[in-house]
Amino acid sequence: MSRRVLLKLSGEAFGGGGIGIDPDVVGGIAGQVAEAVADGIEVAIVVGGGNFFRGAELSQRGMERSRADYIGMLGTVMNALALQDFIEKTGVETRVQSAIHMAQVAEPYIPRRAIRHLEKGRVVIFGAGAGMPYFSTDTVSAQRALEIKADAVLMSKNGVDGVYDADPRTTPEARKFDHVTFDEALQRSLKVVDAAAFALCMENRLPMLVFGMHGEGTIARALRGEKIGTLVHAA
Image (tube, rainbow, N blue to C red):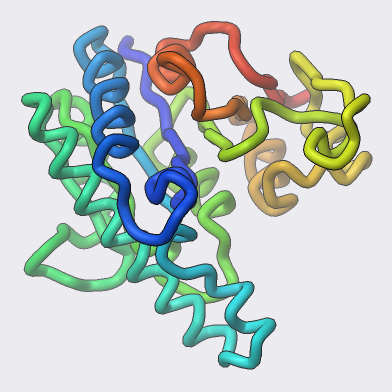
């Protein structure tokens, strides 16, 4: 049976640290995804939208939260369409499914159709988050992974290469875990991934890999199941 994985990509990475889309960065991601597909791995992707708009942050500045979240969802669709274009330039068929109806640019999100695309060797990119406010793309990644019956959910992070016992950007002596249980991650409030995503994966015994997306071939290595980052698993 083929390995089927759900890959979460942060929106900030798409912009190369700035606003908008950096073609070199997105092209590099697409090449690594194509490598994994060539190895027979079934790849579904959830993209964030932080390179365009972060709903939670804008709501703190006075914007109504649900409206801010919907604008953020549209940012994720822009990233999904850009990634689709770059992956297809490698010769790999790709489909975008959106949780918000926008028939001219994306299919509606239908789990069984997504599974069929994966079985045919196509990459499926999920846009528009959950289609509802108050849900992070971390949580959506866990939910989508469960619905398409993925073997693992891979959380690529911008600026951190795994799960640490403290924030390595502010605590130089922070210790990185090679593996940790969901229970321990929740008890210690390890905030690298949303608690709701941890809880969903823990309840359904879905392994989660947290890794840094920067570095040579890290995404392709994670997709292949190589030892990288931090494995979060059920007890």
